[in-house]
Amino acid sequence: MKDSYVIGVDYGTDSVRSILVNAHTGEEISAAVFYYPRWKDGLYCDAARNRFRQHPLDYQEGLEHTIRTCLKLAGPAAARAVRAISVDTTGSTPVAVDESGTPLALTPGFEQNPNAMFVLWKDHTATKEAAQINAHAASFPVNYLQFVGGIYSSEWFWAKLLHVLRVDEQVRSACHSWVEHCDWIPFLLTGGTHISQMKRGTCSAGHKALWAAEFNGLPPNEFFSSLDPLLNCYTSRLFSQTYTADKAAGHLAPAWAERLGLSTEVLVGTGAFDAHMGAVGGQIEPYHLSKVMGTSTCDMLVAPVDEVAGKLVKGICGQVPGSVIPGMMGMEAGQSSFGDAYAWFRDLLSWPLQYFKQPADIIEQLIPELTKQAALIPPEEHTGIALDWLNGRRTPDANQLLKGAITGLDLASSAPQIFRSIIESTCFGAKAIADRFNQEGIPVKGLIGMGGVARKSPQIMQIMADVMNMPLRIHRSDQTCAAGAAMFAATVAGIYDKVEDAMQAMGQGFDITYHPNPAHAAIYAKRYQQYQALGNFIEQQTV
Image (cartoon, rainbow, N blue to C red; front, side, top):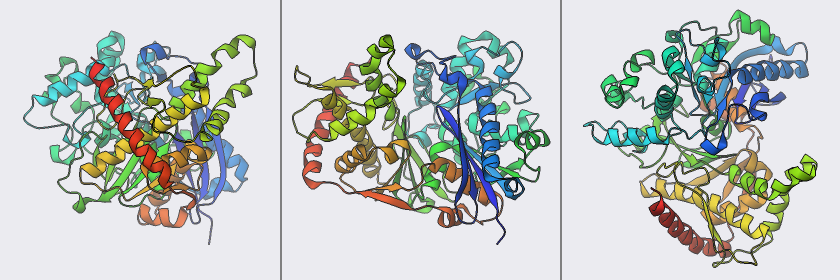
């Protein structure tokens, strides 16, 4: 059988990863990672204001570097065997573009303007706008938030668009439309020259932009213009049709074919968000919660559309037919802070080290050592409790104004003890998500773990299994998001009729299962009640 290769590209928060994969076996031929240089230098961001922006040049440079590196590592014949490329990205990570579909930061006069750059998923500058969208929606006869859990988030498309239009007159004047990162990259690769040519993904449109077949597309212009006249006419500049990720966006444009060292015969798939393609790479099963665990978590669940017809799950990040697997309902939830909570505590402890010029590897060793020492502490009912809302709460019930908390401290509280309470809080936050699905009539029948934290932190995964009181299977692949993108690329290329067949043929399976410790699970059940009580108290104090 002649080799057919596909490329999966995964844009994460800190870097972009590309993998070259044998489309028949799923074997990873080569891989490359590119860390965004401008992001790494902290440019265009202001953590104190919850502003996190990324420059499109970081994305372009990373795309070229990683794909070229993959091809170089694979040998001279590899490029001729590549059939398709598919891309996933973080989200909602939109950008203002001109009529040609070019991000404004790539146009004269906007090169250094953060508002002309991609507004990263964890940017929370639009909390005011999200609150106004929620209040406004409540006054409309049609519930346009019904398919996104009933609550619009500041992390999403329309809130970010409205905020940027309000705060930056120059961007407002130059902005013709608004584009998700996962839609822009395929448009870029296929040589799009006008925004009307852009194929928008069902995933991003349904989960973040309020697109639904039941509305015949986006909510009407009146819904947005009556919220703020600045939004008038934007629906007509966006889209009415969307495409699932098994559909092609087009062929590789000549300019990008030359930059990458590939043929213009290479197909480019429609883009989607990282967790959605990651769920496919992690071989998601119906009613299994697929948890991509990194800086944040994204929790995906799929179910046959007919089995969940009429069920609307309150407080999640949306339920969209075809957003994960075409033909199935895709449901999304997640936590705004997971690995970021551990990194926050590491940075807190290591703050003095910068003044003593300590090697960076000392700081990098803190989380592994804290995790190791925290795991040695047996769970007890009456010890410190933490709240994982250090970056607000994504689900259930989005509220980015909420803050984290740690209670029950005394002079005997040690760094490993506090760190353990933070670990537990992230696992309690995961349980709150599973509980919401169960309460709303969507049974969670199993857990699948993937991502950096899942692969690297067995102690945390054991606590997760204990808190959830369910077995937790860890997918073998270190790059499930990129692997999922590769599976979609193989489907786009026609190597498989449907992505489920690609999952079966290319999936790497599971290599670890964490089983709950019954004694620990009983203690965590009581501590979870304390976590809920603390959360209720903190939420009542939030104005």
